[in-house]
Image 1 (tube, helix red, strand yellow):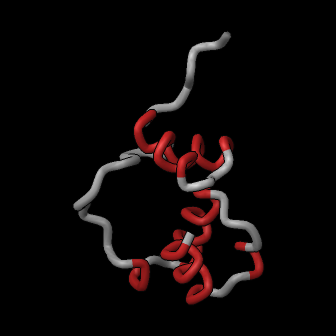
Image 2 (tube, helix red, strand yellow; image 1 turned 45 degrees about the vertical axis):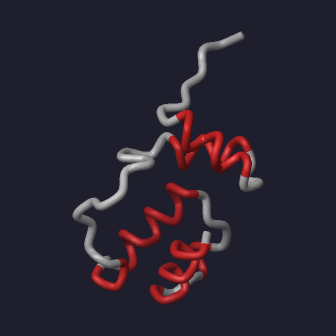
Length: 79
């Protein structure tokens, strides 16, 4: 069996327990700084629509191409 390419196994397993698919769990667990809290990120309201779209793409939000900025923010916060 191939060696796991999951960067944050703990987060991956927690996401799987919540019911996320293997693919989505891996994608989230492999994002830079996954599982870290208290970062210096600015609030989503200060992000550009393009930044929000990229983040939505990184975490696998479906329908993101048709969303406006407020919808992207809502989807990212509730995904």
